[in-house]
Amino acid sequence: MDQPEAARRYCGCGTRLARDNRETQCGRCQRKARELTSGAPDVPSGFWLASDQLRDALASWHMGRVIAAYRTHPHHAPPLSQEVVAGWVGLTQTQLSRIEAGPPITDLTKLIRWAKVLRIPEALLWFKLPGARTEVPEDIGSDRSPALTLAYLEQLRRRATTTLTTQAMTGASLDDWEQTVIAYGRATRYQSAGVLLADLAADFAELQEALARRQPAVATLRLTRLTARMAGLISLTLIKLGEAGPARAWGRTARLAAFEAGDPATSAWVRAQDAYTFFYSGLTREALAEAAEAQALAGNTPCVGAVLAAALEARAHGVLGHTQDANAALDQAEVLLAALTPDDITASAFGYNEAQLRFHQGNALTHLGDTARAQEAHARALALYPASDYLDRALIQLDQAACLARDGNLDAGVTHAARTLEGLPPHQRDRLILERARGLAQAASPTARALPALDQLRGVLELPPGSVRGGA
Image (cartoon, rainbow, N blue to C red; front, side):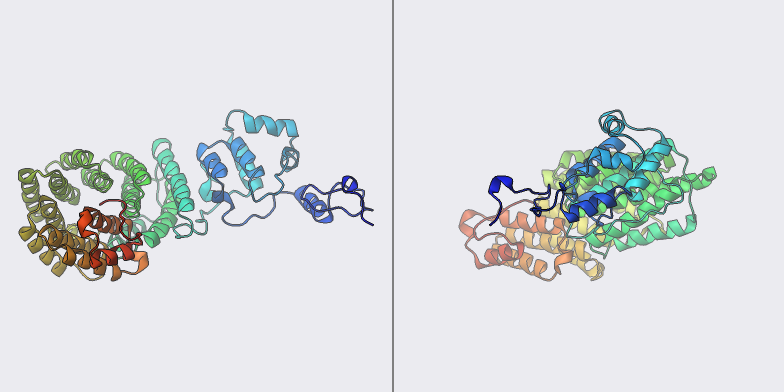
């Protein structure tokens, strides 16, 4: 007959102990305890970014908090004791308790020792491991783990900012880096934002290794400029994914690097990207201020940043209903585009061409309600854009839908919007596209929401029948 309930003995993990087992742990826990005395156990690739507590600890740059979060991570069941973890570096439980609760460790030797003992990925550290090569954690950029991607990117941004303010810049192969960044600029025109963000994160991590090594002043300036451009690309990609807060943070890092590089054209381009971030966040007046600053930074230098900013200024005035100001900004954009060099008139995040200007012109006129001129600009833009430039083409088509709806043909407008979304594979339905389409649904009057075309659009947007959410 079994022992009475009160006499039964259990291990801390919940396993019932055999009657003749006089230990306090089951066999599995005893083996685990023996293994833990020799050092940190293997952990899965997602371990370091799966816990909010551990992500916050890494972001705080406090090794004691990292150790505490590591010990109590849900992966360790039960949590690791201070005594066990302290033993990995020859400390007592009391000493580790002081480290966890005390001021941050600043001794680089001790930081490196703990990083190696805990096997913290080098990419997540706020200091360099000697001889280590940065590796991007798995799932970065994956749809399965957007929070992990943002946490990793925040670590990269913090390290870049620290490097820019405290260390001299250097590069490994400057020409290669230049070509890499140029290629990313072109990729923004056709590659989906999620895929591009993962690649940008990987190369930005390697760029940090280059920035940590000293080089002559000329190389320092080139790498600083590349840092500004890559940070700006990450900001641009994040805003396409609807991550306005992180996009603005990366914009600040890009501005810092551009200022250090002392290049007016780069500073103007970075500021113009900031203006677009505010614009797509619904902060129209802030976008106007950034656009004006971008043009002021450019001065009399013909550059992409200036024309980008002028076009954005027109769009923002269009949203505010300022017809005269919007048309003046469009005229200025035409003049600035004509002054660009052939190298600047390219299909790239670092270039600007007539296709983009017609898109921006059409968007400004759409907001103003000047549908006849807007449709002319839309048609010209679509004729100029290649089929691979899915994002801008989709936004133009949604502006066409908005014009149809504004002219009283709501059924045709929402049908056009639904077909635009249906023509895109799921990975290309960026947040900007979806929010613009939701805005069309939101603008429909209650009496018009019974239209079959609106049901079709809601179905593509995965909205419940008769409802809307979000805005453009």
